[in-house]
Image (cartoon, rainbow, N blue to C red; front, side, top):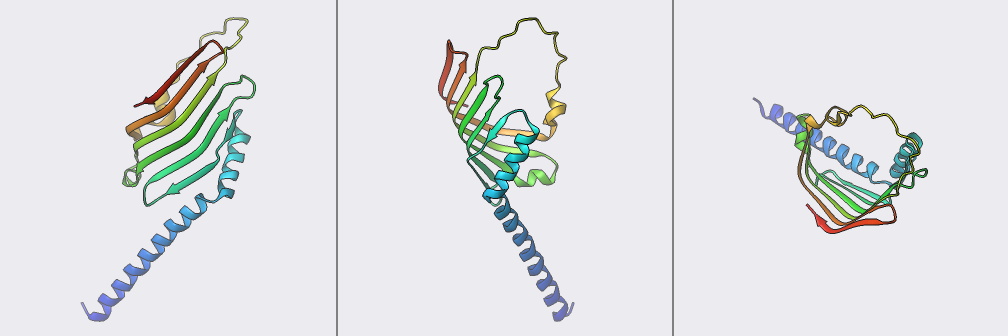
Length: 167
């Protein structure tokens, strides 16, 4: 192989590496913009009967983690709601190449779940069982560790559950 040919291969390699890193940096910049979060929340609220709120989103593709802060979802008719101070999701990027979503760690802080007492005047017929594995494709999901710090769970006005940390 001649010197010119090796130099051409090296230049091509450097150019492809620069383009790939530029694409990753651009994707991270676009996802982390507040306009992207507002647009995604508008679409989620439009297609759902829940009112979803997220204060901030940070995606670090090189660190392989998502951080959502000020997460909240509420059902306006029933009064059910969930609020979280932050949600941190660490994943393995190479698992995506194999078609698997491998989550190393999920960390939730300041979780507050409210489930008011439901009023049901008549008995409803039993529902069919829902196969969650097919719904969420759990065959392609691995979870390494999960941690919930500061959990408050309220069932109506009479009962409540509080925990400092769950693993």
